[in-house]
Amino acid sequence: MTRIQKLDPSEWDAELREMNRVDEATELELGLMRIFAHKPTAAKGLAAFGGALKMGRELPERLVELVRLRIAFHNQCRSCMAIRYTDALEDGVTEDLVCSLEKPAEADNLTAAEKVAIEYGEKFATNHLSIDDAMYDRLREHFSEAQIVELGMTVAFFVGFGRLAATWDMTEELPERFQDHSHTMTPWNEESIIVR
View 1 (cartoon, rainbow, N blue to C red):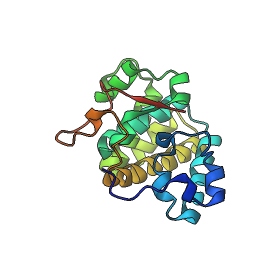
View 2 (cartoon, rainbow, N blue to C red; view 1 turned 45 degrees about the horizontal axis):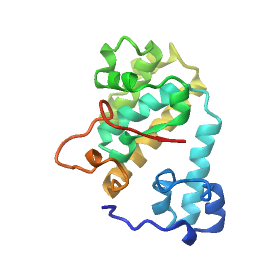
View 3 (cartoon, rainbow, N blue to C red; view 1 turned 180 degrees about the vertical axis):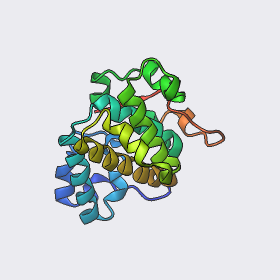
View 4 (cartoon, rainbow, N blue to C red; view 1 turned 45 degrees about the vertical axis):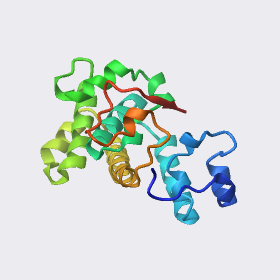
């Protein structure tokens, strides 16, 4: 059961309702915003930041989704692991590809750019101080400076808010296996939910 009360969209700030297109979205698509709505000004800022990351994205949707899911595993954010985004699926993310995230360094269906981005995200989530000059040199083999900044901001967003989401335990709308806290979850080999 979610540890923080979710606000019904009818109780939200009007501008926040409009920003999140509440009349078109399902409860699951509204996700954590139902909790963030307790703080409308911050929620609007967060939505604007997330929207700016998405709308100005140079990195491939496939790469971003793979990094997101690997970080979700380290965060043990069950709602993050259960969801697949339509843009990423349209950019080639399949469940077979998601299964490669179990051992990404060994996967033959991940590109070199995807592997280094996943490694960067993983280090950020597990031991951020291990990210050194050599890691940035490896990133530069595949990405521009602007793309590295984008990747860093995106990873920071995933790590921070994924951990927050994990502590709030908003799992009651997920498939039953994601509600069972007796074991460590993985995003691979699991039933997923597609969100626009």
